[in-house]
Image (cartoon, rainbow, N blue to C red; front, side, top):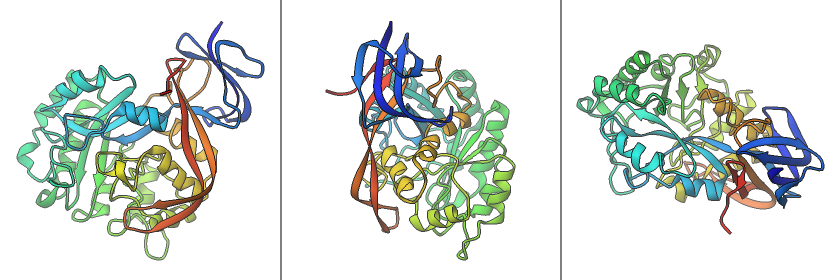
Length: 375
């Protein structure tokens, strides 16, 4: 007997090329079957809804209570369908043990972390105080970072570094070189944040290796990936060709509609749509992953592509093919989504607005093969 059956929804699973109205069943904490006429102990009518794999937000900050920028991963799941939050370096070697013991391990939803190359992690990020954790290289102890990465190899999926005028200041590109050195020793990828220059976009992108991630990849000028004439910059194209992964990382200052339109028109899609949700951006303009996905829907991407960029594609980036899919036998997680039609206002990070006709809204979550959502 199936534990749960969702009946009559539009099942959209890009990992299997599925987009059809049918039923989906869960049993024993896994996806059991997709097909018509399924039955189970708990049967729910989701007619008119989209049933997608549990969403993966590749860039979040969920060290709630341990950092000033942390938000609750459980909140992101309950309100936004995110069953896997990838924490983008909130904690460093100096405080990762607290993140693991007090947030990650007790969490009802999955949290997979990048370890910040800076010893204290992102320790001063708020509306009131903003200090780049990579601006003082005395905070970057490579042996400590490597030690903690190895001791927590069962959990840590990569090394995070933030460079740019705000994040690394006078240290410039040096923290990225240091992060790459640790990552090579640990056998892990790097996720690189880039804000305003210096360093330049070229300096950062040319250093990244196959499997490394450039987040904030569609940021507005300066350090935008596209020229004023609409041509994608050569170093960006070369990086994609050698296997660098391009992640949106919307956040509070890293996503522009103008850049995004130009990149999409040039045929350059991101590899992942992520929110970079934290204590500031959760109040706008990012809000959450579904809002960020909605913006791409309103910019002309089809629903299946938008869902792929928040499920199967980020799952591949972190080497977890068991996530972001509804294949029978896979992890029993799903996001039930309302695709609303109407008139919706969206904003980017530099004040440009977009009036869209579609909006994705969470209607329910399946975790461990069972319905999990507030009443």
